[in-house]
Length: 480
Image 1 (tube, one colour):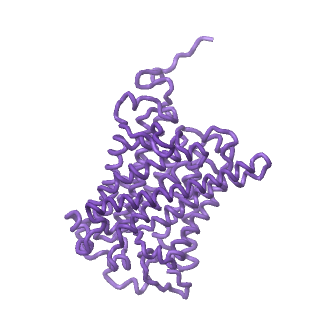
Image 2: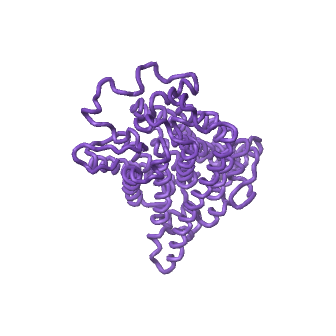
Image 3: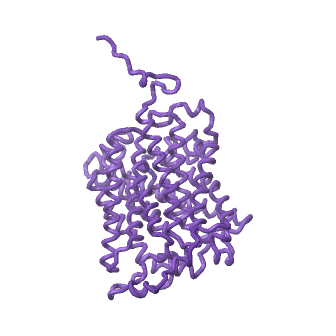
């Protein structure tokens, strides 16, 4: 048979070598951009709308700065330390990712060049630092934040990314399942954020007692970008336009919707009032929980994970938090500990339970090595199932240990040069003191013009971190 020539747009060339898939490369760039949009402008406007008016500019700027700083550090040294040649079992050798010869080479996974992989992994690193910012909003010295971002990226994120995601990392070689960052991003940011909040110290007492969102609709717009952007967050991790990417996307949205609904139902049952802020919290916990499992679990497991992610973090936030002296002491502004550390841990454990062997083989390419516990009740798989759960638990312990130690050391180091916390006087003022700018030229700090809260009741989430007990309406059990 005569050979049919390729169309001219499919012919290999200097910019399109034979090993490169144009479709995979295009999707990977789109997925990376969707993840970038989760941060800029997604979390910028979510944070900017969710905080008290006097902190809107500062909160948004912390996110914008972190994104820019991480991308710079990532291409100069961070990417190679996370995915390059092994220096030690948990850390790669530093090196620049700027030369076109290196950037045009094939990435360590996928049929696309290093340039695409550097971009894709860079926006994941950036959102991790922005999530940490959520725990210290409303009082962290911006100069301290400017130093914290590159140090934490270098001496914490690169450790976990290399250990879990790099093909040379020790947990990766052991067989840990972290499909898209439940450990590397969410558990890390939750633990690091809580630890940083401990060292930075609390907000002003009056801000802890009342911290109303200055613009809930703006916050919802940011939350919407976060949710839809997760299509690229989880859908981009097979590094290919294939069926597993489609499954990951569908599972992501199914779990998230179930989690949001579960959270709202619990609010209605116990507080007789559906809260939109609570709904956003349920959305976030669903997204976080499904992340380590997105493409390796069945659809029914994604729904179950949504039920768990909408209920267990709800319980830790609304019940345990109010009864724990440690959780009360640490001022975690956006409840990052509950939405990311608790939900990320939950996701890692449930992944170990529900990961389906065939889907694992499709994603990882190794038959029989990755077996969820519920699929291990077979003589030939029992050992693999127990081993998988052990590795998942080991990964949790490793991430917690690394982030508590590294974040503490970084905060203590920064404190030698600049205060971690703004002065009491500057915290009274907020944005004007920190940046000489204000978000809105309107009256008040989000207070109502009339005392409508006494008529309708205040939001359940005015400040989940406040230590003051709050009685709920309708004779309900006092959980706050």
